[in-house]
Length: 458
Image (cartoon, rainbow, N blue to C red):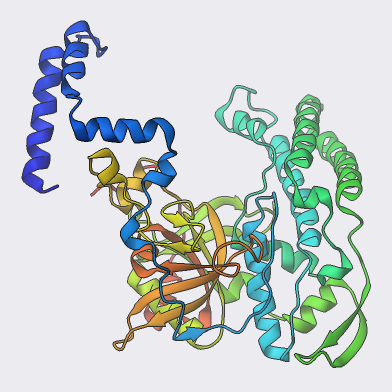
């Protein structure tokens, strides 16, 4: 729809409302009559109405002109093997972080398939999140229970969701183990029930902490409560190993070594890097000022851990670094709004997958900034960025991510992303410092700002 038509439509609606709308903003009889008359029951309107009466909208919006599978060739791809599956849990952020680390380990040691224990990290994530909830209640125990912050704590004591810095805090505090050292359980793969149980206990414990006579008494009580939380987690997820034996094999299956490790010694030997300082998380959010570092109020996942911190940049600058990383065979953590224009049958994220406008005879014209402002879009899922396809001028045509929804999901367990979709619905990338240009590294020297309450609207 061109600008003139949009302005005419707005003017029509304004005059319509001025005449027919009741003084208090309700729909009066005159307004209702005009609304009814606006539907003409023309043949095309009847055809759409008949189709919608018996067919899911998701089928009717499929763009028949875009049914063919896009080209699956990529000019640059990171060496990684094995598709993971988070099952019925919201642990994509953890799977993605561990997938980035395993790709590094596979390349460095020329290994075959390897998978780290997501259950081991999930166990400590739920323990740390429980501690954060209880400690925040201790910190706010003198505020009224009707206080906005206190209500927020009790309304959502614990959740599955997370981010790269939260995963880094956990891995660097507790180490990592191979999957066989602590395999998944039914509860670790289906987390709704365990979160319900923990939420009930945390709310109960929170009231007890608020009733304590002093902070010292509350802190002692919290330690007892966490012991109970630990027992519940062990019953649901197993005992986290403190020592284990692991055999390393090369790509041909030949045994390289068999040794005993602790979770920290395993991490220090095979990963051996400071995740919290070696990686920078970039944000593309046009409602925030570009070139600024923003920081959360508290530690990510871990109460005393590093805070969630991002540098907000235009997407073209983020892409430059992402391309450099992929060319050097290094995968990245990516967060996006995966539910938008996602063809699950093809495993492709493409703005042309679905045609809402033709079905409903209307336009959907919000840009990225407007979608964020109206809460229509935001980061919902994390995946591992592993490939880019560059044209003859070095410009990206499409990207590919390794997902954590199993081998049968998408394109061989992966998702292909068109470059246009990447611009509109990708929000975060965690990139190693060695791929960051000096001018962007200089931006990181500034004092971080707190995430603003008022967003940019121009």
